[in-house]
Amino acid sequence: MRVAACLTGCLLVVALAAVTRAGQADATSPADENEIKRIVFVAGTGSHGYGGHEHKAGCILLARALDESGLPIETAVYTGGWPDDPDAFQDADAIVIYANGGGGHPILPHLDQVAPLMEQGVGLACLHYAVEVPKDRGGPQFLDWLGGYFETHWSVNPWWTAHFTELPDHPVNRGVEPFSLYDEWYYHMRFRPEMEGVTPVMTAVPPDSTRERPDGPHSNNPTVRARRGEPEHVAWVYDRPDGGRGYGFTGGHWHWAWAEDNFRTAVLNGIVWTAGLDIPEGGVPSEAPTFEELLENQDFPRPDGFDEERARATYAPR
Image 1: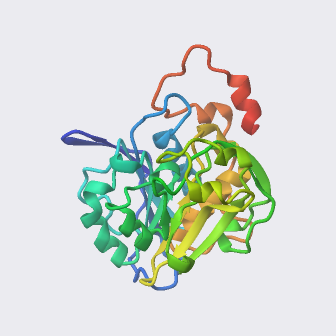
Image 2 (image 1 turned 90 degrees about the vertical axis):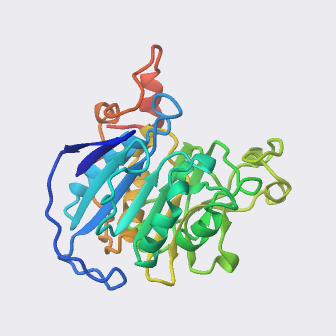
């Protein structure tokens, strides 16, 4: 795994591990079991305080799990926003963005750079806030590249406990058992018309209380309010006509959630699938991070009064 910090006017590269890439195959062809897939993580800047939206720490954790999975994968993590390195996406098989979204989404100034990569079949995965882009700038692209996105005044971002009692039979759900988890699960995404090419992979019924907030760009709207009791999709995959793949996952606010085995496995599976690799029958293998490991690489110092016991109890990390 290579971790790079993107700073104004410079690029600081810390080589944690060097992996030589085996040759490059056609991005749309089936993956050869010996072909190394290159997955590039783009981690946004800190924004929500300690333990929340920990993009850098989360990307490093996920990349490390992939590096240790035994699968033919090499990873690179760029922190601090969009990489300054002009070769950051060279030979990439998938791009994973875990960052703040909306009008400040790091992809927005680089849509023209990403478009030819998508046309070549490079996969795209967006986690949590990174699924949100403006409707008129980024929205059309995300419909084509990701299959759906968070559209303001249409999608909502409440906190609730999602109960995933049934998981569809799809490779990204291999090794994922039914589970429940409290998080800021966005729902009511704007998907492609008729869900063309889109397959929901995590669906739950939000409590009615999540539809009772006042109307606003993220909080509620008449369409959402009228769907009381209806199931909502919070993660999906998209098979693009060009052969590329997209994966959207709306959870991931709290960093502590990565200790939940099913939550973590679901995301690792989605990333690996997006890169064009077959997922093992038991899912992408990974060890649950210890609480001490979760404290590593965070953007903010541990605050006074941090309730460690609550964090430990919420997600039962080892």
